[in-house]
Length: 122
Image (tube, rainbow, N blue to C red; front, side):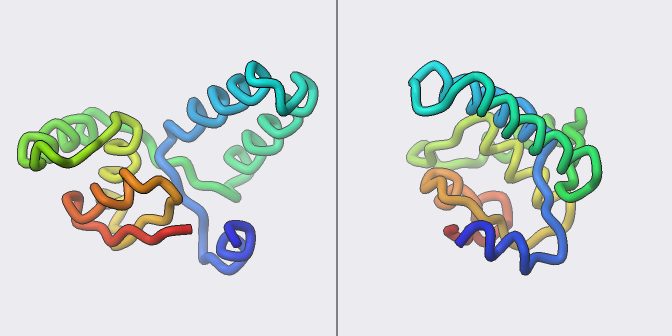
């Protein structure tokens, strides 16, 4: 389903923190055993090539976005579960003018409206 959505999209965008997230995910998959270091390296390199060639547009993390995270979190209800990188993805999407964000992360989906975004489950 994710690949179908990606193929049909006008473009793929993510906060530039996705580079760190993919690196850490690859490391975790090797550490936990379902993948080999060589296989993880191939996947990492394919991802980095997609970023380099513009298949995925990595939106830069700026001081302004970091301050926006700080401002939005001041107004969040205490019941809202929000991780740092999720907040950065959400402000990056909102700042880029998007009205929705696609994720399978239930916490990000729940937090999306606080950033002016509709969360779409993938």
